[in-house]
Image (cartoon, rainbow, N blue to C red):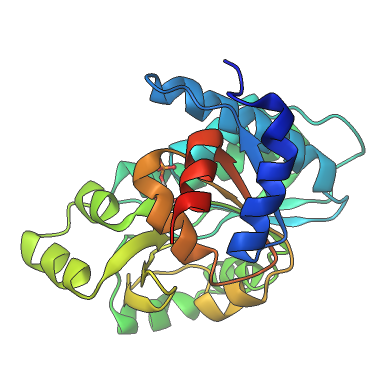
Length: 256
Ligand code: F6P
């Protein structure tokens, strides 16, 4: 597929980055009638960028979701020895297919890099006391400590309503989250349009405070239902690099 206005793409990328106040925006071509095709383009662009910025000893966090999966699917390392990298899912998960995938994706990316990886097979919802108990297990503690060392995060952004349904939350819970103004979801947290947290899943994963301090983070998100979601997440950390598609980029520019 082709860009609608190839010449203007570089300047559109700059305008969107400036409007969102983030480090960089990279735009993939959009297909108006084939979401899978757009997803594939996002994957290619994301994978190229990943190759550019990976360091020899990166601790790479990944989330689940089809967008991150599309990057890792086509990724092929093109330089260096990455054997000292570590890949880790940014959040635990096992109850639900979408979350489960983060573990699979971490393993898949590690295999492509020839690096090691960690997994976090824990239920999606954990009580505080279970989390404390798990933390006392040395192996789990080591994995959780590694979450704090993530220096590159590749993550997906979801539309809050879509994600709360995909996670099969009950309708009362969904109502509460949406009534609080949730528009986006990322790594287990729901946010309103100003990037304020409105709900947090009680699970093991990267802390919001850690996320806010990351120097390298790549969000992969396209599709027009995510315009408000993307705008919201970009308020959390100005080091963010956004991989999105052309239609979304134009909508962001026209949003006021
Ligand atoms: O469930 C994992 C996750 O990364 C969520 O945090 C995010 O909202 C969602 O997947 C994005 O999924 P997709 O890329 O399929 O839209």
